[in-house]
Image (cartoon, rainbow, N blue to C red):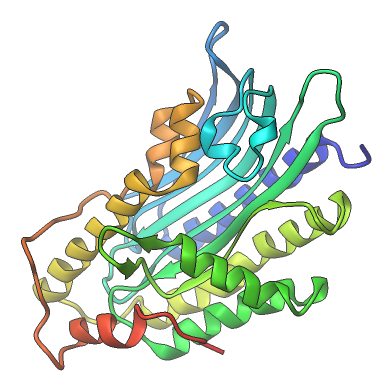
Length: 304
């Protein structure tokens, strides 16, 4: 196999460093960098680095984790589309982040890039890539959604014009709260079990997506970070964060993979917001900015 796990891991570590440098520069605070390794004898072996900035001036919680782990049996969440590999030994590595800003006008964002290699006994390794990014605003701005989607499209364009609409649709389907009949946010791109371009070119596509994250998100942050807000906006932000918690715990395959495979719980749950709230049958008043999130931004649409 021309593409080696150390090559992928080195790029992932560099991406994590680049992103956290940008977070610290924008926030002015310092992230905790927590290197960890699984203890001998645990079902999952490996190591990683969890970087998290909490209670910052800009980011209430910004977590970005790298992990590289090996296990004896692929969990069910990883073989949904590859049942023939169920139970095979595996190696998985990736960078995953979720940023929860303090200002309700700055959207929450998620990005993930990963590689999984199944190692069936007596056979060649089977490798594939997954990832993407999606934007979850509390107060919608059309120019922000357009910029984010344009950045996603441009990252994929060198690899074929068909990828963006396909991955955009996949994102809309994936980040959907079935129990609420509601999108999580304005979407972005999502892909999984991807190797159809060949390993080297599929990895190049993964790199393009990861490298597009900061240009896709940070201009939105800078546009919104100084907007004034008060108790009303904060209450709505915390309420909508509850939807984020619901999705990650009920539907997210990455969370399920980490917990089912015996991963490091503190790192897996770095996506959780520091505060969230729930209210019984809360409905925003018609015509308000809060109502516009539901009518103008959460319904699926072609942002470009």
